[in-house]
Image 1 (cartoon, one colour):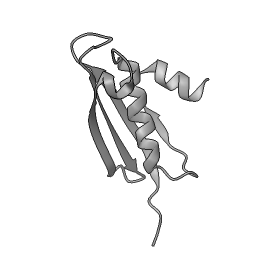
Image 2 (tube, one colour):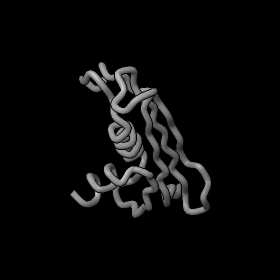
Image 3 (cartoon, one colour):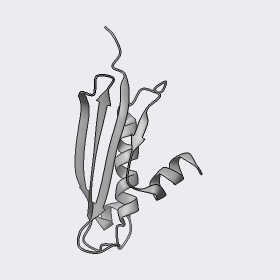
Image 4 (cartoon, one colour):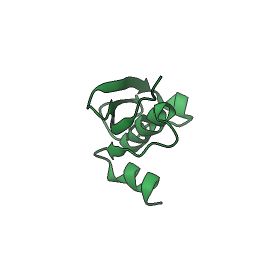
Length: 95
């Protein structure tokens, strides 16, 4: 059985009404293989109490989308991460 090769990760996150939001936020991600077919996609709602905070920011939801997707990417993968959050990408890849 051959291993699925993950080529791309698309991630996004946002908040409800205002940033930071006392209500919560949403996130989603999609993993694609070398043929640009969807291998995995997921989305969710995050509430401040689940984060242990009074509010949730768009950067937190974006980071959550990226980090949660890593559970499905093999350790030896080389992928391209697509995100509109320079903050999240900077924290992950530039320190």
